Length: 204
Length: 177
Image 1 (cartoon, rainbow over the protein chains, first blue to last red):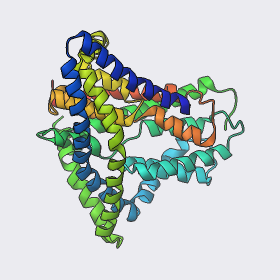
Image 2 (image 1 turned 90 degrees about the horizontal axis):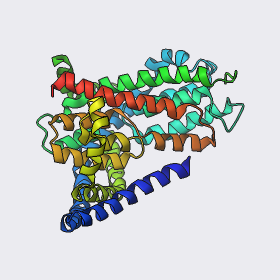
Image 3 (image 1 turned 120 degrees about the horizontal axis):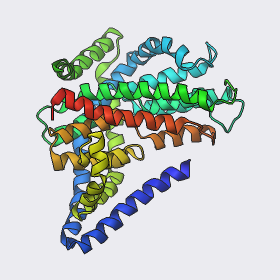
């Protein structure tokens, strides 16, 4: 998996650059392309600096949330869902705690806290796994939930919209929530159906 | 649909009040906690700037050369079949692969089309509602040495596809075209 992902971005990046330069030459837009390359480098730094303020504001606020125990609170609210999503995990197993904390961190947009918690959850799930190189249903469900994660506030997008002078940068919060809920529900249903299709009579 | 707009405009002030209230109630040193968290956000942004430079140069060259127009022309039938603005199509393909590349694309698309255009709103919604699938799968499965991921990618891509279509439908319903 690791190699595939790195290779993919490598190919996409080099592919875009080479296609760009070649098409630019054929198109008679050599100067435009050169100028774009140089300008974009500057724009990238500008974008980074433009994002900095709102990212600091947001991660700062979220750190207050974490210190006030809000993650534990959200985790508690999520608990009832877990029986349905992960029926094969024993009730008091530490995997459940790690999963729920990871989902809460994702929900609050705490990327830095979410990843170590997610890895902890995977390690706990692996202890329940009888075929160590094959994913269990619980692992699949956990990762699907992670890739379709619902985010409370899409801070990065709001920052970009602000930078390009949107009249109302946060107006997309509602549509983001709608789309994320649709995605999450689909992910859960798909995982449940596919687990039945892929199951070879193994529960954990 | 006015309700969705109302929720959007009250979301941020509401979250501020809830979190600050909880912090004070729980005796958290709120300002110190804020600064600690902000420092982490600052470091994260600094860390992604070099990859943003590489990716935005690639996106900039690709657009300026006319190669992007060519790609959009090819993708147009697929885009119009799903009602997706064709300018948003590059993001559809990039989003599952790389987070920082998507960030570079979103910034480029919003700059070219305007943040308050239909396309601008759709790419904003897409960017906020999906995650980088391949990265997440790589890190998490890699951490425990699982090689056979069974149906995970399939289910994740199903969710991703629905979030793309839902983004377009939600934007159309809430903002009109």
